[in-house]
Image (cartoon, rainbow, N blue to C red; front, side, top):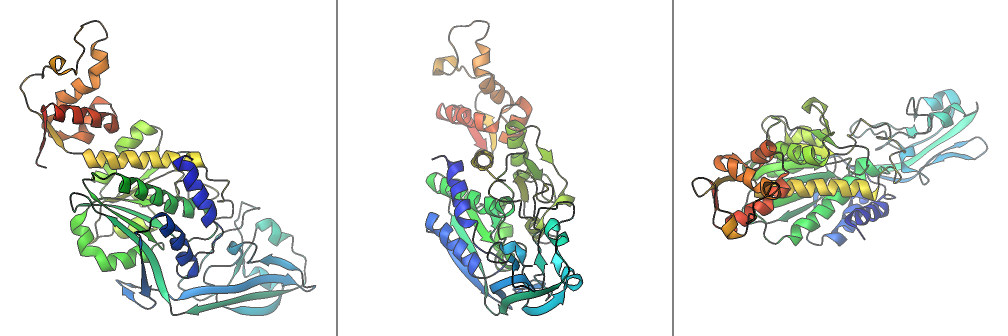
Length: 427
């Protein structure tokens, strides 16, 4: 089975779980991911804990929720689709007429068959979600609104996996585990992070340490930063938020606040060769966790590489963001991009050739010994790399200048080092 198929099957297993910012859905999700990554640590942060200007919220649990008409027929039922209930709804048990009912129903305007994803995490209220077509078809009459839910002191749960390298400088990979019934916006990130963590673990000769986080959106990153900020500021050299990485329509990039960190440079370099038509957004189009990692005073070098960007595809935050929207091919493509980004960062350094003028590659078996018209073509990438390996340009710079993917230059670097023709500068 391909890695893309493995990720898709894992997402399919996770899709039915009812997740929110806190609660059993997050724990169940992390339990399944720990099956894949046994060394993942799961942490609990009690409700009410201060995290900078925020407070860890209460847990939310729903036993049942529905709307039924005056004849006892269920119009919508939480058991059929958990998006039918506004996230963090407080309890209600009321009979209302149609006009009042509509005050508590949210629809996605312009998408008549989509059920929207709506939450009210930090202000107590209740509500229901259904398609615009269904709401508009409801006949006049009396309707019974029931939400049997509970908000209680519990904890916020997150997963963490730190994979040590030769150096203590770190690459951060952060993703969400808090959305219900959304495949691209939610599950594509956690399953990609899981697959990438497996890949990193399998590479025993790692230069950098990798820090993987599976957290609730916004409050999760804020809570984590409140506990680890000083360490992350002094150790993080590049970071990425994984979200919306499972469809196959396009590739997208959202820069860090500075826009020219190592993470940004590696991302742009890989995308320029993998999918030159990628969409480059402004940092002003950033999402939730990027805002936290890039916030003034936090200043971590974190950017986003995704497929169809959050908020930019019509299925986003609706019931149409389902398992049919993502694909093994879409997930595989994003896996390949991040694998290339990690390799680019691992090998990025300032390289300098150790001899004056061009080294004699032929006597080392690195250049054709018979000279003919196309001899140079077979080693052009190596010769061009040597031409710019002056100790003043790093791997990404040279890759951009000679128009050869950094991944293709890595074997060249290895060969030149084995021949004692290349050295790294200031490593």
